[in-house]
Amino acid sequence: AACFKEVIHSFIKGRTMCLKSVVQLAFLLLLQLQGGVANDSSKKYSSFATDLRSQLLEPYDKVVPPPSERLINYSKAGVDVGLQVRFFKVQQVDLAHGEMKLKVWVRMAWTDERLSWDPLAYGNITHTFFLAAGPTFPEDTEIWLPDLQLFNAHEGLSLTLEAANAQVDSNGSVFWSRPGVLHTMCKFSGLVAFPFDNLFCAMEWGGWTLSSEYQGIYLMGDTPGYDFSEVEETAGTSYQEYVISEVRVSKNAIFYAAHPAPWEIVKFEITLGRATFYYIIMIVFPSILITVLSFGVFWMDPQIGERLSFGITLVLVIEVMKGTVAVFVPICGELLWVDLFMMVNLVFCCLSLVETMLVLFLAFYTEESLLPAWMSIPEWPKKLLQSNFQYHGSTYQSCGAGKMYRSLMKNKTDASDFPKIPLSMTRVSNIAGQSISTSDFAKLIFFENLFFLLDKDADGILKIADVVRMMSFVILTMDDEHCAMEIARVAQARGRDYLNRDEFIQLCVEFLWTTTSEEIQIGVTNYQSGRNHRQKCAEDYWTKWSRAIDSRAQYWIPSIYLMVMVVVMNLDFTDSYRDGTSAMFEGPGPAQMSATGVVESLITPFVGA
Image (cartoon, rainbow, N blue to C red; front, side, top):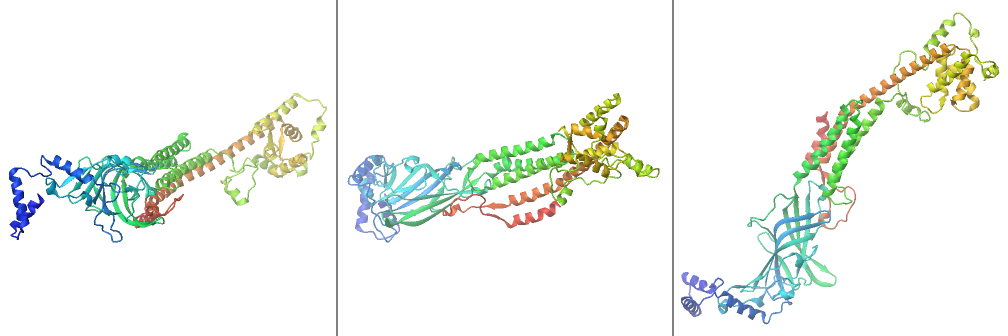
């Protein structure tokens, strides 16, 4: 048919035809009139193709590379093989195991001069087919097949690509296309920017047994080396996480010490785009919303009991979301963007919780100092950690009634007329053996009851300082300084700053035995009132501090969070895995920020202010 068309075309153009051409034209016309011409679409194709295949395969060696016109100069033996991968769709991406599956059509083309024939000798057929299961299936393969392997395949091509026949044309051109799945082991790059990442995975193709000395590689197609399936309606992706956004193909040659010839390698760099919107609405936005909600505790009154439980609940929610994120990313040492994002939200949720704990502690604190009595620290932090509220007038530490009594008595009598306080335990020995009246018996019981009343910690001891304060409210003739000095002299022999119950009763006998029970009760009641009033003042003071912390936290913590989040959202995390030479790292990798991100980070504080 081709010869017939060529003869007719030459005749129409007015070209001079040789006698051979005229004879061929007459022969073809005769066969056409007799209905004896066979072609690729005629009924006799099968018989001619069967004869052709038997003739071509009779002396054929399917192990030796075929002869052909090579494109290179350093070797004329063997053949050059064209390669093209037609991508159908992304089937699976497994980040945890570093694997990718792509539905593809792998196409190869080469010239095998041993499989060429004259169409006129075989019913004018121009192509036929041969079994080509694969090089690893010799019993199902009739012709030589290229030795091209995917180096980083998880499973061999013989297991993932389906068997398909090879089409051979009359000039010896062979076209072999196989559908299947490329199961690739990927050294992913770009995952550090998850979920705003573009994943990069490289596939390397090359000869396994045959070097470029016998098998060269060239790239086929309009877009050399690859193509996308657009004709079939089932091609492409929908409702999937990944889509192939870009493919780059390059070819280079490498040398091995054991073999001097070059080995050509074809590298496919595949860029996978991710469906980012899903992660924005499922992870990014809820995390930001929960963190912002945690700032709501700054506007809650400390008296609300659910304030602390609300903050704890939101911290737990952030932890649950971190567990959800862990499902989508592999366990690795590299710090991913999403790890930094979740860490920032967790830190600010915990900061809100810590602020709540501090505010609740101060709101219900009634002591004058935040430090325990046994702790000794420098003076400047000690002033910072104790109350410094302004109190107008006397406090319960100093009895105002005693001060007034001593002021009135100072004009009427000398200080020598005041009752003297013994300097040692003499009164107990003086009254020992004497008869005890009912009033004295009641006084002793009251002294013990007074101990239980003053022992608010229920630890069985009273501080000397507390006893001094109480005595100053009961013994109006003695101020704090003299009372402390006298009691210290009495307790000096014990070598400690506290009294137990028995020692307190003895001390009361020495100092208060001559004082009536009514006076003692009135003085103790006055002491308790002063102590309660002092505690109320301290409580109000620390409550003001708690409200001051809340008022400042309402502005500063959300503002700082906004600034930090602007910086985080504009950070571009990268890695160096794409070049294939860098080793695995741990912790944060290279990070940069666009010019827009820098401007946004700088103006955010002023906008927030």
